[in-house]
Each structure stands twice: as structure tokens, then as C-alpha cells.
Length: 143
Image (cartoon, rainbow, N blue to C red):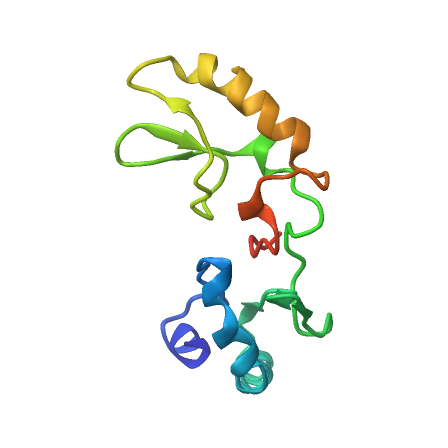
């Protein structure tokens, strides 16, 4: 993908992780060495082709070398104050990582009512605490 981005004149590539249910994440640990090998190769190619490569700073619970990775929102998230994701059905959710927490639906309320509503305020109150939504644990959203 990095070579393809360079050939197409694109400035960068973002590598993200597909979130599965926690009981389905065993593959991450089984393939960790292979994943890291591929990340290292991609990093070298990106440097050679002068392409920006954004890699996550962790895979599952295992941190990635900070020399090749980018910080994620895993430990501190500001997205609930800065963005919202609107689904096909009008549901507003906290971010583009497809978090299942719903602030509200814009077919039933105005955007402002939802953005300033109780569901949004509750999420923001807990997002950077140990009581955060389960989906935010091990977040891969890159800063």
C-alpha cells in the first residue's frame, strides 16, 4: 500500500485495526510477530518513498515502538468534544471508530440538542476515566 500511495502521488497511508469482540482478538497475539515485521517493512518503504505512514501505537495490549508508530486516543481522547459520526440512519455517535454508543438520532432531535444532550455529556464525563465506555479500551484512533 505504501508503494501504491507513492506511485499514485498520495501523501500518506494510515494503517488501522479492525475492532472485534474482545473474545475474538486472540489472532492479534498469535500474529503479533508477523504484524510487527510487516509494520517495520512498511516503515522502511515509507521512508524510502517519502510517504507519511501512520501506524497504531499498540496492537491489543502490546505497545508498538514509538519510533515507527503514532499516538492513539487509547489513553486520552478529545474526540467527544471535537467530532461526531452520523450513521446512515441518523444516529449520532462519538467518533469514526464506529463506537456503538449513541448520543441520539437527528431525525428525532436537532443536532444541537443531541450535541449538548445528556447522552453526550455522560459520555464526555467518563471517556478519560477508568469508567469509560468498553469500546474505548485499546482505542486505535490515531492522533
